Amino acid sequence: MPLFEHIITFPRLTFEESHTQLADWLKDVEKNLAGDLQLKGTVTEKQEQMQELKAVLADIVSHRHAVDVLCERDQKLQSTPSETCSKLVTKYEALLEDCQVRFIR
Image 1 (cartoon, rainbow, N blue to C red):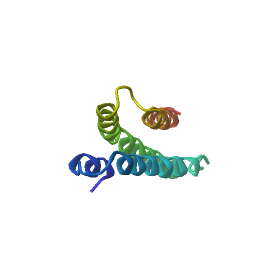
Image 2 (image 1 turned 90 degrees about the vertical axis):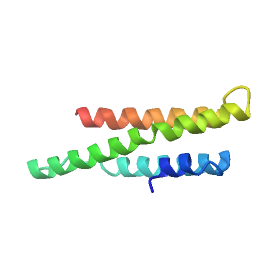
Image 3 (image 1 turned 135 degrees about the horizontal axis):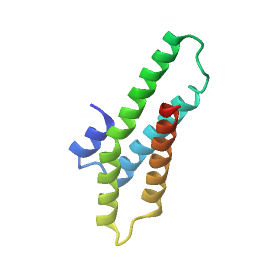
């Protein structure tokens, strides 16, 4: 089950558990993207790299709902969004932008 579905379908997870899962997922995606900076030489390799990047971008976009749900839960727990949630959103949006920029290149 994808992470975002796990967070949404198992509301018994605490805010901290959900946040940890999303933060870990973000770190994993960041690592994967960092290791994929080298340009490929052949057209076939470039096409494969583009397909992989497309899959990563789709994964990132699919997690938007999980980020939103987590922040809604955070807001229900507190009168204003916590710094923890704000940082997570900032990291998510930076990751999304980074992947989109790479896709356009």
